[in-house]
Image 1 (cartoon, rainbow, N blue to C red):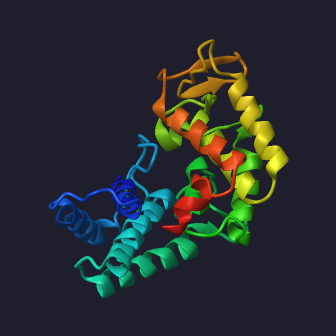
Image 2: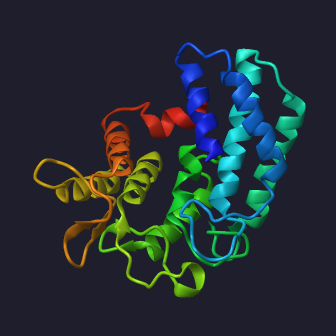
Length: 254
């Protein structure tokens, strides 16, 4: 999605990678396109088969794209409509906090008006939308632990034929469990974060690889194998738990 692309290119600037002369023009085109479509519903991070909705994670990643574009102008003196982009960025943030957060649940929710949880919400502090210790993030993590953690692993969301055409009982999506460990570490719940990380290490196969998901009932890896997404999570969480300044702290400071 556009937010991930813009964030990756912004990180490349931060670490001093030599930019391609067409790179910023490409990024400007992406961000300008996003300013015209961010209010539209979509299929969300998980590409659900149900009707399009205003998924909270999608809006958060739209915010990421605008935030990094604004910072590219502010910090690297690139050319662009910074006032306009800053205005859109702030509007997105305000709308998400107003419509993507359920005060009764004390949690962000899967999509505007929903009562369902979604593990993609664990990315909110990891990309810098809100601090990990913000009360709304703390409430979201607690709600995900309550509703999506099953047998020690995190599900993407609770599948429902009416929601996405999938039957209940999907295995845990392993990247989500790494995101939870990162959140626990950021909230100074280090013992719990390490316990979850060890649980994930224990399900690797004989050569240390992970698949996309895990079926706790059957005790086996499931889904695409090997899965890069799972291993990216493993590396990031290992760094987050082994020393300060890991990705969970570094990325939000973009």
